[in-house]
Length: 115
Length: 115
Image (cartoon, rainbow over all chains, first blue to last red; front, side, top):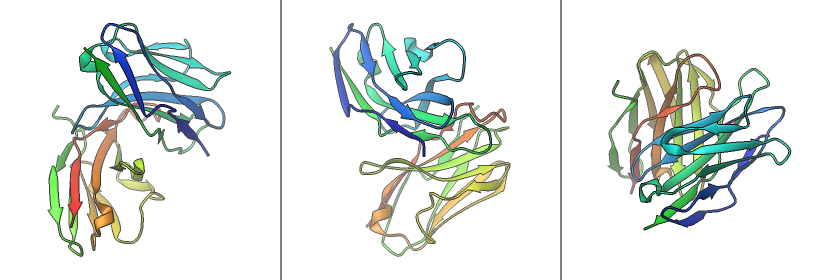
């Protein structure tokens, strides 16, 4: 069975500092990987995805993520955090071996950017 | 495009009552998902429709829950009878393009409180 682990319930970072939100996954075969963000009282919004190719994926709002196959990780990064980045971040995975496979979401990491 | 539309946004009901949640996916999207989000269990997939046909309902908690998609522009999630443990935020999401690695677009959610 596929799974996603977000080991940190909360990440605190000072405004202007780089941020990292960690994600590791387990899936049969090669993965499709996603990051979503959820602001208070809103639905999830797509940030970026890895399908194949370049391991560094760039997404919305200056976010990027690096796919590391050997470490089965897909950490979300941003060079300089903004207060407005404070939100709940979800990593998600799906296998790409064909047929139906559901997308499995992690438990979420709350990012708090401190002014 | 207005995005995924859900109604009502908030629902407060008493235990034993029937609850119906509604969703209008993004026009042209052929996949629709119902999720439930709670603090304890995180984000859970309840049911997935493709081209109006239920493909995966393994996440539906029990017979009290049912979902329909009578056409490409409308879906309902019904709980009958409702119980306090059903209190959660219910999200509808849609996906287009026919590709399993396309991102999902989430609605704003319905916050259900069962007293």
